[in-house]
Length: 344
Ligand SMILES: [Zn+2]
Ligand SMILES: [Zn+2]
Image: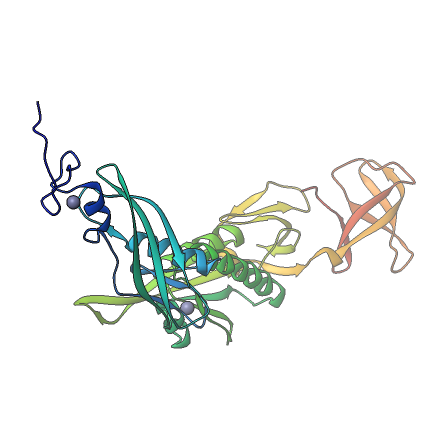
């Protein structure tokens, strides 16, 4: 049987497991503590708040500060926290004297304690905003055309790249686009990350019939490590699905222009697949503006006669399908000639 103990301070009956009575415990030494000063760093440019070693967006600054203050409270002995009130906290003040009203339990006895904490809010530019304002970059995507540049294709690639950049800026902490510059023969996009640069270059290549040529240059040293800048030369085929082109003296419709360019022959023969890198041997003839609807006058023995809307004369059209008299068909005007379109 445990021996009855008495309070070493006042001689009253002691709480089991301690050498003090209930009264002396609740009036006794402070069991909860917190740092005298708690500082919050907030980036004035982007509003992110430093949290540990990283910077995070906080939708509710007051809530964030309260939870950090709660985390800063330390308890000694067997004390456990029951509740915590935070008084005088004003996130809009640079400095405020906050009271933490701690309610804890020790050896089954409830105890209230109050801790004074000075809360400071400091403006500090985060590393991302710092780098952004210094036009920092690690990689460059050079968008260039294979063969003769067509502004509309470059424009399409650029708007796709810009959209991708925005998605990455939202998803990747610390990533930003440093600059987008039109240069002679294309566009340069400088990025704060090598890794994102590589991912973007790959995605553009897959979508637009392009090849990626990376080159790496030693840029400097950081913490004893060599730092490289990578340039991703993205050479884009200047063709889009729906374009009409000439390849080895035959005319084709571009059916696909991704990692392989697929060509459908206009005058019979087999489809052709070529690599984007070979696309400089293609000659652009035109897009949908070459297509016209014409009326079929007669179709005999594969000889289809139509009315050419520009001259109103009857002309022959090279066809692979039957076209009943009086029907309408879609043709492509290749120079003087009208050719039946192919289905994609
Ligand atoms: Zn006592
Ligand atoms: Zn910032």
